[in-house]
Length: 203
Image (cartoon, rainbow, N blue to C red; front, side):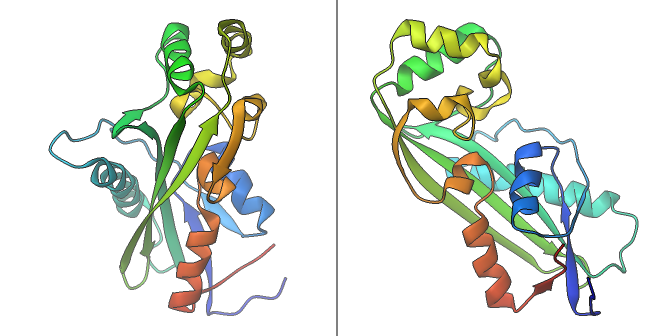
C-alpha cells in the first residue's frame, strides 16, 4: 500500500496477543515492542491513577528503549484492570484465586478499566485516556467455574476470565466497548487519532 510521510506507524508497547489482534482486525500497521515493567500498583494513588501509572511505565520504557527516534510513529501502551467496589482483580496466582474471583463476580456487575498512553515519537507529546466498561455476570455454579478453570484460560487473564473466549458464556450483558473489555479501547483511541488529525499506515 502506498504511504506518505504524514502516515504514522503504531509502536505497540505490549506483549498481549489480544491487543495485537485488535489492531490487526482494524488493519493498522504496527510494530510490536514488548516491554517489561513492574505492574505493582502504587498504594497512594486512586484506582484510575494506578492504572494510568502502570500504562505510563510501559510507554516510558518503550520510549527509553526504542532505537530509532526519527521514525514517524506513536507509542501505544495500555493496562487493563478488572475492578469491583474500587478493588482491582489482576491475573490469578493460582486456581483457587481464579475460583474466588469468579465466585465473587457471579450474579454481579464489575468494571473493566483500561488506561491508554500515547506518545508521539517525534514531538514527544503525551496523551492519556482511561475507559471503563460494566460487565454483568450470570449466576454461576461452582462446577461451572471449576470446569472453566480446568481449561486454563483464566490463568493469564485479569479478573480470571476472557470475554472473547470461553469466559464469554458467563457474561449476561455488558455496557461499553467490547474491545475495551478484551484489553484495548479501540473506539476511544481512534477518536484521539481523529482529534489530533493523525493518519496511520494501514495494511
